[in-house]
Image (cartoon, rainbow, N blue to C red; front, side, top):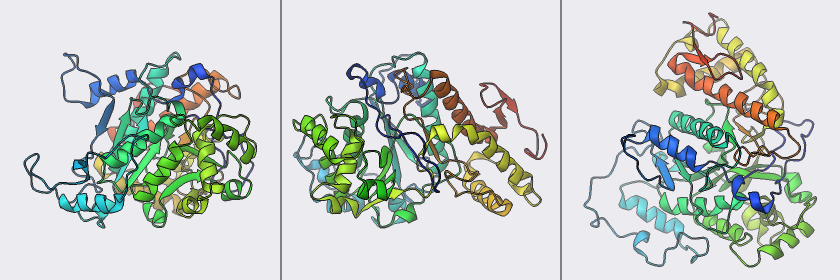
Length: 462
């Protein structure tokens, strides 16, 4: 799950190489995000079971949407006795959740029938705007010191974002296909999530080492009406140069449809669950520019499917390579600018006419205040696109700590441990301040774990 990101919404100097980092075999499992310890700690906070009595830690935990979420189904169907509801694709004994199992066919019709049987309109906003976020972890604790604590903070960051935006979060600590470890583990998890969540139009994979650094920004789903896959990348580098680092597969949004299931199956066949895996590694090195090894990795495989596969146009025609905002941004070009970003947001809120934006409010009112803050930023002339970009001073939507290996403990040799550690702490605190504001606090300093109360009329009164 460690992949280097680059670039941004606007043109500019390229950061260092952003491709997949090659891991020693003994550390492949460490590269899969999150840790079982993080899951246990999160469950203590999130579940209703008493913390006094030990309970088993499940491998898959789903945090449901709030009943008040704008993305929730508008009305739940009447309760039906278990086993008495209409039969659906789930009753087919040949249905397989495994990437090695039988191919799922007719999914669009089966999913639509399931939705209608549950009283849901497949074309309604309650369905078409419903998103399930999926992230994953290794089953074992982290090898690196402090890795479990860091990954718990990454998890809290995702929980915060999902709570504010009505997104259901699913995190998985099981290897659904034991041979598909490290960056390959996402494919079995995403495929299974599609089948387990027919009510969701979109499944959103987010690597564990990615931080939401703009809690206001919401996925612009209307922008993706004609796309079934959204991934951060550059058309020229994928389709013309065929660079193995032309995109980054650490964060992607995929529609819950037959096309997507077929893509996941084709993608999985290039991975370690299939005997052709080694041959694919050699082919990818020959076909893709700059690939340094014979390892078949998920990122190179996706570039190949989009640019070189005999059926490439089938995949490319419904894929959007997003660079209009930081769908995921390269941390090394972001963290040093966060203080400047925060200063410009505070200045916009201190401006004449922004007093309403400074009012204290309930956390559930976050979307209204996020929209008002966006208007204030435009009025103040803060440059850059909403969601951030390589130029300008807007909050980056997602900051991806590719190469830092927080669970493994040893970052890529491009970075020092201290640089990664401070970068992660700075980004997490930057995001946390946006959440803590609704509770009347903020961090005492960018690298401080202590918090201080906010004065009334903040940030006008400091």
